[in-house]
Image 1 (cartoon, rainbow, N blue to C red):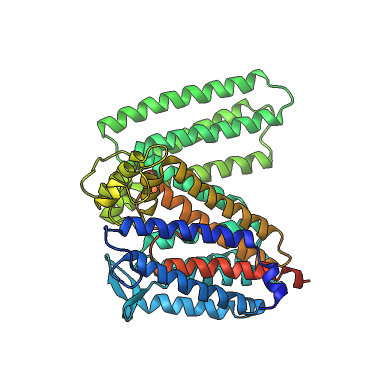
Image 2 (cartoon, rainbow, N blue to C red):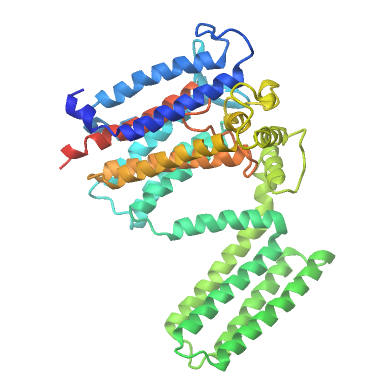
Amino acid sequence: MAKSSVAAIDWITVLLFIALVGFGWGNIYSSSYNNEAFSLTDFSHAYVRQAYWILFSIVLIIITQAVEVKFYERFAGLIYVISLLSLLGLFVFGKTISGATSWYQLGPASIQPSEFAKACTALALAKFLSDMQTNINLLGHQVRAFLIIAIPAIIIIPQPDPGSALVYAAFFFPLYREGLAAIYLIVGAAAAILFILTLLYGPVFVIIGTLSFLIGFLTSKSIYMHKEIKLKTYLFIGLSIVTLIIFYFITAIITKLGVLSLAIKLIIIFLLIIAIGFFIGLLSKKKSSERQKIRYSRFILVFIVITGFCFSVNYIFNNVFEQRHRDRFNIVLGKEVDSKGIGYNTNQSEIAIGSGGWTGKGWKEGTQTKGGFVPEQSTDYIFSTVGEEWGFLGATLIIILFVLLLIRLIHLAERQKSQFSRVYGYSVIGILFIHFAINIGMVTGLMPTIGIPLPFFSYGGSGLWGFTILLFIFIKLDSNRVNEW
């Protein structure tokens, strides 16, 4: 590489990468160390294999920096197609490990193509959005962008590897940055919240709460449109509250007795909507305007969709999710306690982290780690080793390093002159954030176990190489920004 190219590299990001990889290897060594003499030739040890994968990562870094920037943009589509073919090939040539056919066996090593497909999808999405003909505000272009994201995720799900497929939600970050309407994020977040609340409290009570929220929204609109808050507004609010209270108790009794079918419940809800609409029309000072009619129609449509979604949650949960997923959700939501079965990993992880206290037990001194109580401790649960041996302060330091890396990448993405580089940068940010947030939440028992590694930290060659390629392609794009215009 030319001297100027080396100088243009963002060394702060590189140093953060080195720090995370170094800390990660140290904890992998501690979690796989068994009081034998240190050796870098005994490949039966996880820390030995990881060390060589780290060395090979240096080769990958050199390659990503040596390739011309235009190559990534020009051949993004071809790279994406090759990644899809590699995912499809697993159904014929793949090796099954831990119940998932997600690897190719290449001699003594196993390669997981889904780890590399993230970078390939990021390139394809960046290429599509940066095309002069693309307008993300057009529905047709939105559908094409969603398909670029969804196709690899759909291929990954039946391996089965829902954790890796979930990561593709990260690509909504660059879409939103490039102008995608916020309604998509709001709908996605609302669907997730409604799904969890329905599992906890049942569909009827969630629908009542949703109805309260929507009525409050309409009421606030009514108050906003009047310069003065008059008696009719208070009367409307009072009638709405009274109606909701009455409906709440009626529904509670019906649900407890179980005497009415789902269809009758829906009819009652629909009649309630009509009654509220009657009060709105009755208490309006003037006849409803066209805008008010549209707003009320949207109110009814939104409520009907939410009602249908809430009543479908139990079917999805019981018939679409696998038993292991249902068990993990139930444990996280507190509906079940299973510290010896499906919840064993999370329970032992929490014990390990909690036992570390403020400063930890010391490197290679973790009793939970040495005793092998936490399964998959060098991979998905590597953060439990940090919590036990380095304590709260050490765990906080690792979290700070990840946050600093994400903040730095946001800074780099915003200073890009080309849309291609900016979109790719935000894709990197989204992927790293999703992995980081879900893994930490999973290890600490805040989220279900779905098998997502901690970037640059967890044991595994494919994961390390995939994240390295993902990050250093962006570093290369950033180093070339001075030559873009």
